[in-house]
Amino acid sequence: MKHILFHITFCISLLVAGEASAQVNCTVPLPPVLTSVSVRPETSQTEFTWLPSESTDIAAYIVYSFSDGDGQAIDTIWNPAATSDMITNTAPKYSSVSYVVAAHRLSVVAGMPGCTSKLSNVLTTIFCQVSMDTCYRKLIVKWNSYPSVPRAVISYSIMMSVNGGAYSEQVITDTGALTYTYDNFITDDEYCFYVKANLEGGYNSASNKVCVQTEMPRPPDWINADFATVTQDNKIALSFTVDPASGITRFLLEKKAGTSEPFEQVAFINSADGAVAYTDGNADAGIVNFYRLSAINSCNNPVTISNLASNIMLDLKLDGNLLKLLWNPYRDWLGTIGEYRIFINTGDSYYEKTSIPSSDTTWSAAYKYIMYDITGKQVCFYVVADETSNPHSVNGQSTSQEVCLEPREVITVPNIFTPNNDLKNDLFRPVLSFTAVSYHLVISDQHGTVLFETRDQSETWDGKTVGKPQPDGICLWFLKVTTPSGRNLTKSGTVTLLRNN
Image (tube, rainbow, N blue to C red; front, side, top):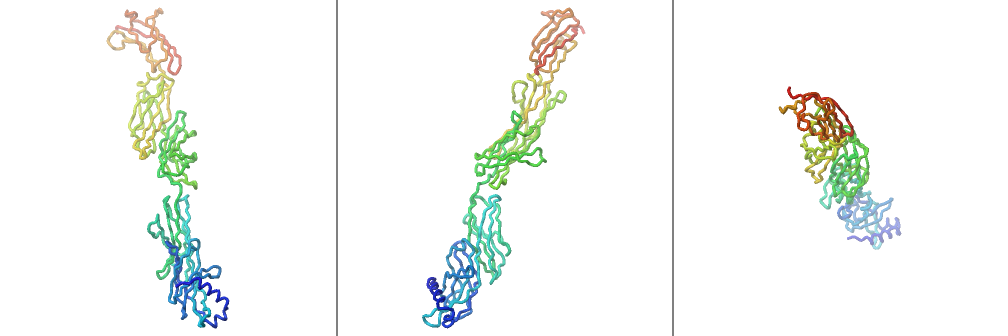
């Protein structure tokens, strides 16, 4: 039975009586050997075990907390056969606590105080602490060493529980290790730890339990690069969609030109609505630029990186009479490219010319098939890529830069025609490689008499004047046109009318 208050009074009486009196009334017993001090993690109770004093007539064992060479009695066990004790004490939850134990013998003289042995060896509880590194998603466990006397420490076991589950041994360290790092914890979970010193002989001593709630801004599970598209003013517009469950609002945009170059920082962007938009006004739309977006944690470290976004670079060539468009495939949507659509502007506005499969990145057409559609100073193209099957239902669309060429403004005039109704070379007309803005053709004989006149580019002369066939001979022609590019051209020459060839 435990009598703490009695023992405190007893100790005070012992000090008053003095050592000489104690020697007369009681023979001081030998101290016990404290063999272990261990904290029960779940209850925070401290458990003590000891080897009993080798002296006889022991009446009780006294447990002390020990600090700066002094002991303060915290429990008395009035059982001469006792070799263990359990106390409830919150101190080991906040620091490492040292303990000793002593044996007590009653006085041989009735009514006189007894005597207490010298204090035993000192044992100290293991104090466990946990800190959270949110920058690198690590939990750092630290503890103090446990004394290796009287039982040597063989190793330390780090025990962990998640969300109230059973404890499991994470690692066994050697005796010199007093820290352990748990990597890649999950946010919004509770992690509890305690440390166990493994002693020789199969014994062990446990520390206090310490728990930490991993509360931190949740990083996004994904960032989708929606598109990189070229704007009308030749800048590159970017869009990214961020996992809406994320708590991170700061992002880093990076860019590189070509696949072999390193990424360079473009901008830090703040967004809390799950969407990130940016227009790169310094980009060269005539080369392929690659972009990626990273979510940045509170330590300025990237934690989630998007897929790549790349602009489409379009090239236009006129090879002889063949128009050729070539472009790089769009990279790297999380979905697939559905198709490429080709848009053309021949003078008024853009319209969709055709679409081709995603497996192809070229298109060609004979120039003659578009030359009469050209009504402006240039003929221009751009290509659009369309994404399908995006896993986050954010199908993107990317537009290339605009490429243009000046139309061929060529005028070809035949020098002979044969209006004999054989359906071969029966009609005369200058051949233009464009649709003229204005057109005036006059044909006369060698005396200056007008034989034919038109302001319609499509109208032809059949060799008749007011329904009357003209005789064979040389005719004069005069042509004045305004081209789509705005040039005014004047040409003249002769054509031979020959019926009987």
